[in-house]
Length: 432
Image (cartoon, rainbow, N blue to C red; front, side, top):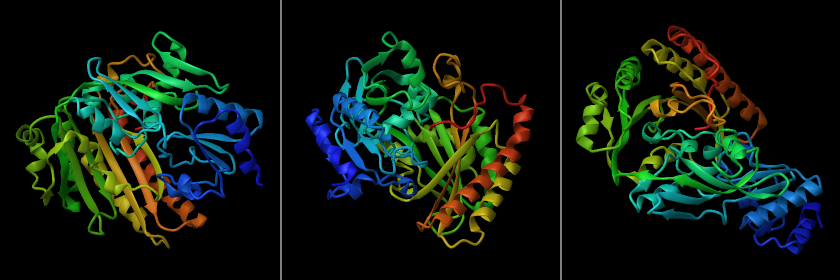
C-alpha cells in the first residue's frame, strides 16, 4: 500500500464524507485535469470535499502529518497552485458547486467550487447578476479573492466589491463566518489578498437587477488597420458610459490560421443604441460583425472557445495609462515576430487590451479592502498556448511571453509619464 493510499483510512475514520481519490482509483487521472495542462501534477490524494467539516478534517490531518496541501476551486491557475506533486488536493469542484438565489434580498449563495457559468445562469432566472469572470468556466474562488474584473465592472465595481460574506476554513481547521461585522479584519484581507487566508467553501454575493439580453460580440478587422482600430477604441473609451466595455484582441493565429485583429464590444442595453455607442468602430468597416443581441448568460462565454480547458497555457499581464495607436501597431508587430519565430511546437500568442470602465472601481478607498489598485488603469492580458509536453517547449513558450511583456511595458512607459507617472497605487496586473 502506498503512503497516499494509507491516508484514506484515517480520514474516513475521522468522519470525512466526500470522495478520496488516490492513484489506483479509476477517476484519478480525471481528478488531476486543470485548465492549464502544463500546471497539472500527480497528487498523492484528491479529497473531493462535501462540507466545511470535510475541509477542516483534511487540513488538520495534512498539518499533523506534514503533508503538502493545496486547494482546487475552478482549477484555472496557470502556475500550478491548485496542484501538488505527491501531496493532498482539497477539491471543491465535485460537490461544493451549488448556487442559491435569495430573490427578495438580492443575494447569491455560491459554493466555493462553482464556476461563473453556473452563477450567471441561475441569477439571471431572477433578473439578477453580479460581476463575474469574462471566461465563464473560471471558478468563482480565485477571481473573488484576487479582485475580479468583469463586463459589469463599470456599473458594479470589482467582484470583491460585491462580496457580502464567506464561510472559510483557516489553517488551523477553524470554520469561520466572515463579513463586515464578524471577523472583519479577515474580511478585509480576503477581498484582494488572495487565497492564502484559508479555504472558502461558500461565497455570498450582492446581486443587481440585470436585463435578460445585452448587445455584445466580436468585430473583425484587417490586421493592417490596428492603429486605426486602437485610435477609435481610445476615442470611444474617453466618453464611454458605465454600461459599456470592450476588448481589443490581437493574435498570431486566429480562426483562419493567420494573424487576427478583433474587438469584442459590450453594451448593457438595446442593440440599436449599442451600435451607436460603438459608431467609431463600426464606421471603420469591420470585415465581419458578429455583435448582436444575446442572452445575458452567454456574455461571459464569448471567449470560451479560444481558451479551452486542458491545454498548455502561460498567462501574464500588465496595466497601462493609455494605448497610443503607434504603440498598438508596434506591440502587435513584436507579438507576430515573437510568436512566429521558429519553434517545434504549434504556438499561439494572444494579447488582450481590456477596456473595462473603472470609475466605480476607483471610487472605493484604497484602504477599504486588501486590493489597493483603486486607479483607472486598464489591464492588458498576455497569453501563450502551445502543443507538446516537453519541458524545453514549455520553457520556450514562457520565454516568448516574457519577451512580449517586457517589450509592451517599455513601449507603454511614455504614456504613463504623460499622465504624471505611476503612483504607489499602481501595483500592476491583478486577478481578472
